[in-house]
Length: 397
Image (tube, rainbow, N blue to C red; front, side, top):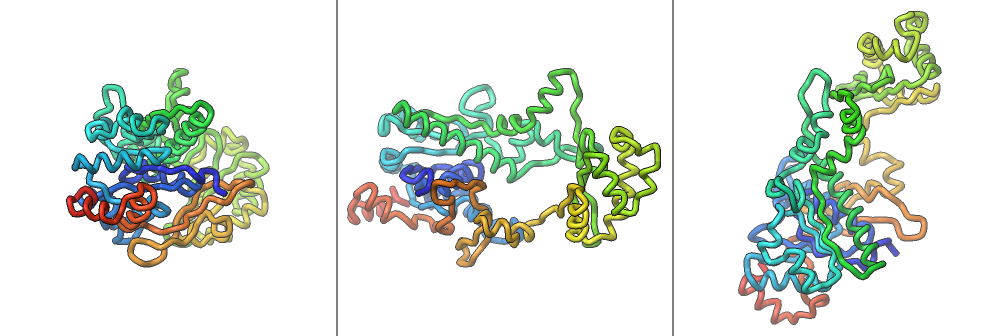
């Protein structure tokens, strides 16, 4: 049995951050019903060139494992139908701009009327309250507005745009908050409205920098530098776009590295005789390490460095990840059916439980409306005639 088996989610989320939240919960066993319409499908269903594919790769990632039904929420009876699904659910999740669900007649107060202990999860750019709550936003905005983008990039370059890592960080935080609200409901019998502001998630990831500034310090972009370690960074190797990560934090590691890399003459150089001196002269060190690394095979060099106690590894690309034996054996990377009729690698839930079934992706990307017989017929106990009537009147559309 999976940890969230028996929990049902009415999933109104769109794009990436909100759907990633419910995707994580579905892998933990929750039954997740994705609610869309042909008039307004999730925009990520549309083909877009990303990850080297022309199909909806992002949608495949966050919608697998879910059930799909159509509801025209512009129709009054569509709103009523959505409420019926909420009435048989434990969680209602949405990721529209603040106020959209309320204007549709599906705000928290309205949903409490049909399910008094419902847990509603709202994921938005800036939260449901406050002077900036009306702003819409995507991942690059979350990172920029939350301060994470400013701290990402090279010292002599501009802030770096944060994309899917921001969406997924928001989604994981939302999933954690959802589980907390469900736990509280189990103890008290009370539901809750969980309000997740994506920009605040970004700020939570730079807490050390905020603390430093509040204490009078100055924070700047570090690139691949570290505040004290040197050599430290990513170094080019003998193949294009193949990088070796090295992080030297002790005298023993420095000596082992210098001997292995043919840089033993640096050991007697007073300019590099201490960790502080090496950090001050890190640009000259980086140049020397780069001259060595560019002649190395990344995998072989990493293995050699590890053998002598130097922290080093190949900077994995996507091919490395999906073919990694360790990740495959743990079920962290699995193959699922995609929306184009083929197979694709997918990222599994990053956790394992000793006393329950492992989180898993058990089905591929759902077709729009694929599970209406089950949801409308079995869960809502509607007859085929009733379903057909709603479809004819474009309530189900």
